[in-house]
Image (cartoon, rainbow, N blue to C red; front, side, top):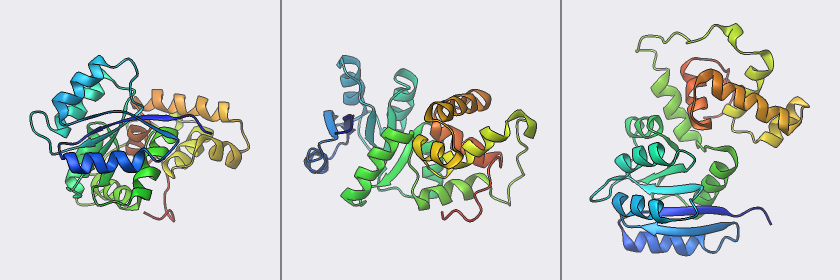
Amino acid sequence: MADQIHIALADDELLFRQGLKAILSKEKQINILFDAENGKDLMEQLDATSVLPQVLLMDLKMPELNGVEATKLVRQCYPAIKIIALTSYFSKPFIVNMLSIGAVAYLAKNSTPAMMLTAIKEVAEKGFYYDGKVMRFIHEGLLDPSKRKMKSAFDTTYFTKREKEVLELICKQMTTAEIADKLFISPRTVEGHRNNLLLKTESKNMAGLVVYAIKNKLVNLEGHSF
């Protein structure tokens, strides 16, 4: 069995939270560390726990401390935790804003259990998960032709040919193993290129790297279904 994915939940709706726990607890690969009723409760439990979650399912509309502010705090205090924004607000400006402050995936509350499990596993393995609709929103939001064109922060020679190949495959949401097979290199070499890309782009995580690549037109995603 694959290594367990430690997760935590933050949602003020008790019935929804309990239902989500019931669904996720059936998965042997997933270990629910704790659940919180709002952002304040979440931060208190994170401060007190000896084992941090790898993935956090974060509702955005919560009392006392909402999910947007809680996401900012988690990113500041616990940058290794990957946040999946979970909400009813599935609009382009809201999605782009949440991703810009550190969420690595975005799911509507009416998503299927299968989609929820896919997102958790993808985030745990790759560091981010954008379904077709979210990827399209990111693409449109960052590359809106009505807005002034953004010039790339670096000369094209700043990245090696191999780094650009790896970057394009990361943006197509391929795993390290899949990229290694595709390029006929070792997974360790892929990780080396990933680390170099993070350093060169000053991105904090894979989600930030993808946004950076799209924003600066460093990859060609033509033909990739959004």
